[in-house]
Structure formats: structure tokens, C-alpha cells
Image 1: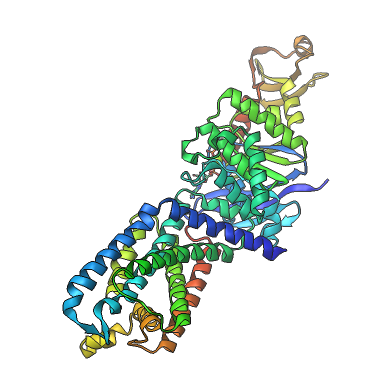
Image 2: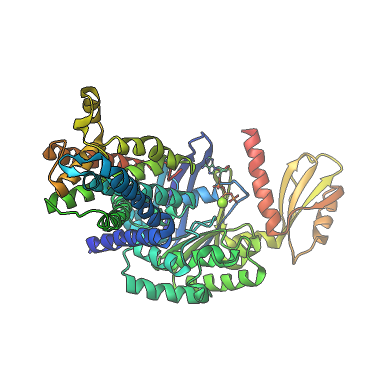
Length: 311
Length: 257
Ligand SMILES: Nc1ncnc2c1ncn2[C@@H]1O[C@H](COP(=O)(O)OP(=O)(O)OP(=O)(O)O)[C@@H](O)[C@H]1O
Ligand SMILES: [Mg+2]
């Protein structure tokens, strides 16, 4: 299947010398619902900013549905709809004008633009507000206005930078519903979010970015699979001369006196202790490692921190 | 096909700009109407009647073209500098950056929007001036092309100013310290033949002198300068400023980080 987005070794150094991206490579398949996760300041908005032509890249390549953003700019841009992290409409303009004007920028004639604007404003529950100036909308309405504006030229790839930040639970769920619907109709979607629950419920594939680097890029399913195995750390009485093996469990030695063990939630721990005892290994204590997506996320990011400090 | 799309995009920017300055007409269209009416009353009627002739015309008649040009210059510049700076400030410039619009269309749209306000104010001031004097048009084509080209020059200037501006103060520095003095010294109120030799020569370095005189020539048929040269200079300015504005847009100066 075609790729909706390909990033090749994208780097960004801001004017003040700050290196925000250190070589981002990523593929998002057509039709995908993709989450880009990462802590504050990781480089999510910078990455999406480069894709949206709002930030100049330092090096690397961006392809949107096969069109090179640098050499086939207009074709690439037509494929893309953008919902940025910060509100970025003219607060003094009327809601309807903001959407119709955006359509005009894509060359859509006035009448068609007006029809489309009505369609998306209705869909996002903003039609009654069409004649109000944008500054009079609530925060959640402003976000929905930006979504309507991003869809008015019917892009094949929609990117949303924290679309549900500051949105109440009920509205968040209705936005999820809406995004699922347009994804089902064939629009590829990339979103960033700090709500892992959101990524889990919506997205099929995921990348985690930290300090300008991708530290994990996998399917949501295999990530969640990881979560079905619980990981325990066992502290041992004596140093292990060789790594022992335990049938049916993944095992890693951390240092001379501790091992890490993956335990399928359906299997339980009894056999572990039996086998360890058979081999003469005495376990002094046991700790639970992460079992929730949140903790996995934190551990990935922390691991990245350690690597950084060693380097 | 592509041309059609680009024209729609261009026209969208122009109508957005016109919508902006008509929405805030109290700040954009009304002030020049009031100021210029005061100029007409004070300089034209009250003082002008004591000054007598200038360049073979009643003083009122002589300054009317200058005052019209002055409003066109101020308003073209002011429209683009405020609007484009506001667009940067509120970040809705991003609406344009994500869209498949070439930079020259963005520039053309803003410049046409600025020229539209300049010309709208020009028409208002012209109509007002008719209450005080009669205007006849000597060379229609020269009059019209001078005023349009001048509006374009200053719209481009306002655009460049907006690109560099980081604060609201930055958008009033050039109008206050450069544009206003040059306009007042640009032969709006007097013929430079009245000036001593040195000041006459110095005045010839003021581009606004050429625009005002060219416009006055179109209306009255008198000018301090050579009209052909004036046109060449105005067009030269347009080329240089447009090239510079395009350079700024292409590098993303003040727009893309
Ligand atoms: N214009 C800029 N100039 C200099 N540094 C910048 C600029 N914009 C962003 N940065 C820096 O680049 C890094 C990445 O920022 P970015 O906005 O991409 O993070 P993010 O992952 O979107 O974070 P958040 O989750 O907080 O939105 C941050 O350290 C930020 O301070
Ligand atoms: Mg961000």
C-alpha cells in the first residue's frame, strides 16, 4: 500500500542553535491512524511543523503521498490538512469566513467552498456559531473550528497536534468518534497527544519521539502485547555464574545479582519459583516493573535519558 | 486549470483584505476623510485664500492632488503593514503557509488589498475635495496609472515593514519617521521651484516628489519634474521592492522558524 507520509532523516536546528530533531525517519501507511507520542519538548510539533511547511527543515526529506514537499510542493500540500497545537485563526473573523477563506486558499470556488464549510461546520456542531467572530467561541469550539478548517479541502492526510488538549471528556469522545469516522472513510490520520488512553483507543500504529529521536516505532497491537506480559525484577542472594534458563519465560540478566523476567499474565509465577529453586537460585525480593502503557512510555523515555547520559 | 486555482487563491486574499478594512472602517476609512477635510478647510480655504496662486493655480486646487496622493500613500502602506503584521501576530499566516499558494500570489494578494484601501481612500478624499474645489482631469491615463502604481509601491513597502516587525511599535516607526516627513517634503503643499537651489536639488532625491508631481500633472497638467522619468522611477521601485519582498518570503524571514 502507498505511504501517506514518509520522513527521511529529518533534522532541525533552530536559529538559536537548539537541535530539536536529530534525524527522524518514519513511514505512515495510507489509511493508517498513527500516534506520535513523546514528552513535552520532544520535537513532535517541530516534526509536524516541517510536514506542514510552518517550520523550515535543516535537512532531510518529506514525502506526502509520494510527492516531495520540496520539489512538488503544491501537490504535496493539497494532500494535507493541518490542525495545529496553538489556535492560529484570526480571532476577529467570523467562523464561516475562516473556513470559506481557507477553502479559497486551495483554489476552491466560493460556492463550493460555502457548501463544504456548511457541511463540516454542521458536522462539528458549529453551524449555529457561524456568524460569530472566532474569539467568542469556547476553547473546545475553537479546536473544532480548526478541524473544520483543516478538512474543508478534503485532504487525504490529516495531522492533528494535540487536538483534544483542554477538551472535556464528553467532547473528547465525540471528537474520537468523528476522527474514527473520517479515518474509516479513507483519510489517513496522524495525531499527537499526551493522553495515552486516546492513542490506545484510536491509533493502529505509533511512534515515540524523545529529544528529537524516534525511540520506538511499532504497531499499537505489539505494544499492547508487551503490556500483557508483566515484567518482574528479582533480586538474588548469590551472584549467578551463568544465566539460568526457565522454561516458558523470557529472562534477562541485569547485573550479577538481579534478573528481569517476563511473565505472561495468564501463566502466573509458581513455575518460575519452582524452577529457580530447582537450580539452587535463591530469590530475596521481587519488584514489579511497568504494566501500563503509561509506564512503558515513561520507561522508554527514561531509557533514552540513560543512553543520552552515557553517550 | 492551475491558473484558475491561483486566481481563486489570489482573489480570496484580496477579498479577505477588503473585508478587514471595511469591517474596521472607523479606523481605516473615516480618519483620512476627517483629516483631509480639515486640510482642505484650513490650508485650502482659510490660509490658501491668502497664499494666492501656486504653479498657476489657486492654492486649493494645487494642493488637492497632493493631499489625495498623501492619503493613498499612507493608507496603502498602513493597510499592508497592519494586516500582515496582525496575520503574523495571530499566527493565521499559517493558514497561508500550509496551503498550496506560491509566495508571489501571497504577495500579490496583500499588495492588491493594500492598493484597494489606498484607492478607496483616494476616491473618498477626491469626492470630499470636490466640495472645496473643482478638479478636472488633464491626462486620465497618467492620473490613474500614477495613483495605482504608487499604491503598489507603498503596499510593497508596508509588506516589507511587516515582515521585519516584531512588535506593534515596529509598524509605526517607518510611517512616523520616514514616510510622513518625506510626504510633507515631497511637494504636496508647494512647488519645489519656491525652494533655494540646494533644497531643490535635495528634494529631487525624494521619491514621493515624483509621485505627487506625476499625479498633479495628470490632473492639472503642471509638474516640477519630468513625467517619463517619474514613471521609470516608480516602476523601478516596484521591481526592487517586489524582488526584495519575494526574497523575504522565500527565505521565510519572520514567518517560518
Ligand atoms: N522557534 C524555536 N526556537 C528555538 N527552539 C524551539 C523553537 N520551537 C521549539 N523549540 C524547541 O524545540 C524543542 C521541541 O519543541 P516542540 O514544540 O517540537 O516539542 P513538542 O514535542 O511538540 O512538545 P509539547 O508536547 O510540549 O507540545 C523544545 O525544546 C523547544 O523548546
Ligand atoms: Mg507540541
